[in-house]
Length: 287
Ligand code: PAF
Image (cartoon, rainbow, N blue to C red):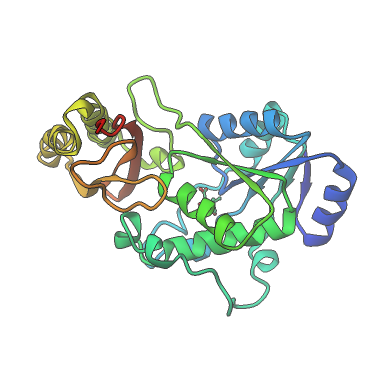
């Protein structure tokens, strides 16, 4: 079993004893195969792997699912042990936020785009806790899922803008055989809701299949799938479907070439789901 540490002092001691390079996998628990793949990636990158488990209140808006977010610590610990993590940092709220925070990270214009439109303040809260985790754990490497593509882009930007001494690694999204991206929130879905939710990954796949036609064709193909899901029972209520630059999350122009991310989010019942596919829209035409 990994060593479980809950306080700053226990963490500092375990960190000093661990020696060698350290990779951190920050999580909010409810670990699934996607998290396991992050731990395996972390093991390839460093001598020691630490997993943090903390449901961060600062990144949930009013009316979001902070209270009902799944907390499955015993199963999480078993998953960490099976994947070979040496350390689990599971602080309480009083350790992460001993006082009401006055100084926090602002995610800037990028944090107000795309996912930030429907979840104002989410990226500020997420970046604040990630910076605190970096300061406490002092990892050489930190591994995050590509599933939360805007989160990953924002963390890369924070590391660049604040000169943080950590290498950020993105790991591919893990999917169910039928395409549904793994998420801790999938467990909220009934069988009917899950069937509707599949439209998100199907729409992205349809968009990717139309990639040779350029941004307009991609959006058109994806929207056709989503339009059907909007009238399903239960329906998918779309928050957004965008084709964006992976580094800035600004929507790309119709003549765009090179890397892009096709991202979509929506609600099925009370569950908020997000998904994305990285695309390559080819090289610019020769002059
Ligand atoms: O992706 C998550 O689980 C969370 O946003 C993170 C990075 C652990 C910060 O709370």
